[in-house]
Structure formats: C-alpha cells, structure tokens
Image (cartoon, rainbow, N blue to C red; front, side, top):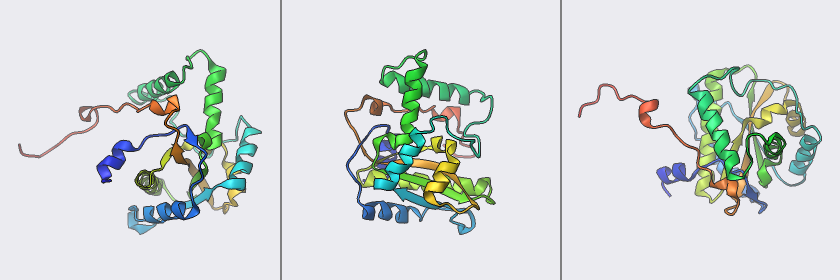
Length: 221
C-alpha cells in the first residue's frame, strides 16, 4: 500500500468490531508514528493506549456522567462562522442521515453522540496529551503525530476515529491515565477494525474543491 492509498482509505469509523488488537501491533504503530515531524524535534506528544479492563472501567465512568465536565479548551470557536459553520452543519446532517436520525430527534442524536464514550465499540482507546506550557505550534505537532498514527493503522488493516469529544472529560481521563498534573488531554482516538456492515460507516465526509482553499502562485505552465 502506498501513502496515497492510505490517505484515500482513511475515514472516521464510528462502528467497530470487538476483535482485539495485539499490544505489539499497537506499540509498533505508535513507535513508527514518532517519526512524525515536530518543530525543533520537541516531540511534544505523550500517548496512552487502553484496552481490556482499564478501558471498560473508563467507559463505565463516562456512562455514569453523561453531561461531562468543564472542558479545558474549546473544540470549536464560539459563534462559528462560514464556511466552517456550513461544513460542520452539513457533516452532521450527512452523518445522522446514514442511520436515519432526523434533526428533530434530539434524544436519538444525543444517544449517538454518547457512543463516543464507548470508542464506538473499538477494542483500543488512545489518548494524546501534552505539557500545559506548550503552545499552538506544539498542538499542531501532536496533530501531525495523530495523522501518522491513522495512516499507519490503515497499513495494518485497522481503522481509527479521532475524538476531541474526550475534551469533555479532562478530569476523568486524567485520573484513569494517572496523567501528570503538568500535562493536559488533547484528544482521544478509537482504534480497531471497522464493521463493514454498519450503515454509519458508509459516510465519506465531503471535501471542498482545491479552488475553495488553495492557490498556486508563481508556477509556469
């Protein structure tokens, strides 16, 4: 598999098979992903992988507190504006359409949202953290590390779903991970094998054309 194929196959999977992923496979993916670039080679990521009983214990805690906690950062800016607002709105509409949940059925939408807390049934939950004193450039570095994890997972026949949903549970996750106080949670990620029969996995999020966000300047021909 080449990189272009991995990029094309990667998607946010929201229904996984329960089949376990061996520890050595998870470690290999995380170690290889550390080749991701970071400014000044700071390598600011701190990564935790949960499976088995610890993962189940965390999911139980989250289920017992459906309203979550005070987030440590805003996943989206307040009063999101276009084109970002429209993109987010359309993605939500497309997602819920795959499982037949209309906009007016808010209880059903909330139940689907809560499935984030189960990692959508994935057997592995990943958490990406970093030192609180680091800034936006290092957050970008962690994002590049996460993307590398996702592409390496595709190479191994696995799938992922990045989940900033976990920003709603900073205290619960920190306690479960025994996260040092000088570190904070950035994002979670589900890792496992997609359920090919799940309708929600038919969603391929739309992408705007190059002309909407890119320019080529100074090229000949």
